[in-house]
Length: 89
Image 1 (cartoon, rainbow, N blue to C red):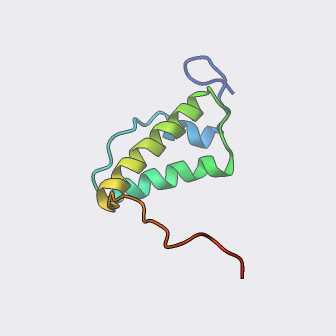
Image 2: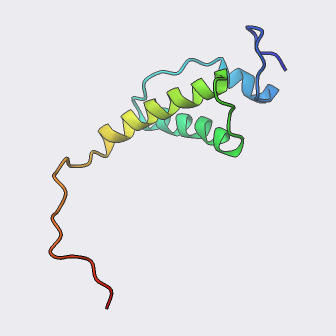
């Protein structure tokens, strides 16, 4: 199957419509759920590196990570020191 710009596509016809949808910042939980649903299909069939699908997967991952880090922040703290060396007893 050829993409609309003439290069091969690794996704099926049902996914082409989603691939034409622009990736936008996630602002709501509904946006987050939609982005998760879209990226999950790539877990079942991993896109080949360097393809439009791989680039779309990467962009979705970045957008999802940004939303998750804002919604569920983790504290930036220095690592804890270990009380003693690891031992097997």
